[in-house]
Image 1 (cartoon, rainbow, N blue to C red):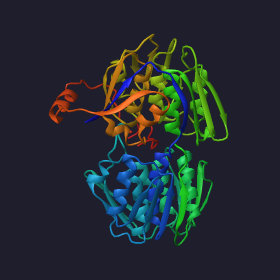
Image 2 (image 1 turned 180 degrees about the vertical axis):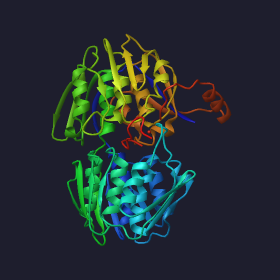
Image 3 (image 1 turned 45 degrees about the vertical axis):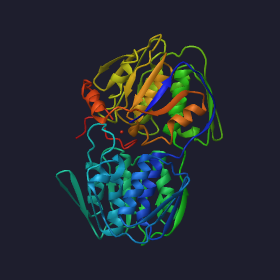
Image 4 (image 1 turned 60 degrees about the vertical axis):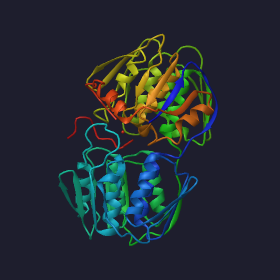
Length: 452
């Protein structure tokens, strides 16, 4: 089993290029199924999630190859329209294949998505959108089957601006007959990336990046290429790590305009933030102070995926602060691990209250999910002594060698492998008491807490 060994107490310094966005790359790869030709996806991050997505494409009959950060998909032949449970169980965002397969093949089948466990993952909004386009959607046990060989344009009003439901509606509507209007659509930058990709392939889409997207169906799409946008959550990770550990860093190949919510909070905490072009610099000297209460919201609000990272940066800030989660019901599963470092956190429903402490001490920690795992690394950078972060399979889902990036900024972090048996590790994990309000991650595919 692999783990990170982190020695805290070192400031971060230097510059770092931000990887391509996981939450953009995955829907772009799914969209390639719609194109009976070649799709070239540049700056596609080499992650566990993208690797699983390529395996899904190959299972469907596509040719999918990676050369460095460029992925080429040839979907001239799609021979299968069902995704096996073994692959879906590894990928929370696998449900975005529904719209693409339905449009290309007239049917689609899959088990419910896996990935991190952030609480209930209802697919109601996805089914609502596809049914309104004329598809039949059936749930049986833990699986979904969609049928619809004659999709027709319509008006789709989403009850909530779900990223995944918006993506599926776009993928199903782009080749449907007539006009489709998607109201209360998600506005995340990753939606804009998907719209641009489809437009470059011949899709007719208006209103991308707004709450109402209009799609004029076309008969077919053609070969195209696209460059994945920078990962705003990865950028937020390094900025929060600098806030927690101190120092000064510079990020390039990023989009500051997409990160205003995060940058505003870091400025409130006492960080010096400067932006220009595709760069963000962050400097933290002296002790942080708590920000005003933060509530996660759909874009352009504070992103739910940055919430664990911010909380980790708040642990040693002066005073008391609070974070309210409105997107995922079980987003605070990493908090018990932070408490092992000496963090003081209390919960009131979906709100976490943090009282800043003077010092944190290294500990053995288990990552419960993708962003929670990154938060543990962030907190360990500001702790005294050595920490061991396990559960790297979660972290590797969304970061292309997180340890390499942090090491480039001066962190003392190494990936190592334990010699202990799997039985010993499982015994240790089972001995941990569950947190009442627990978590684990698809980034960005939010469903309002309490909605079922």
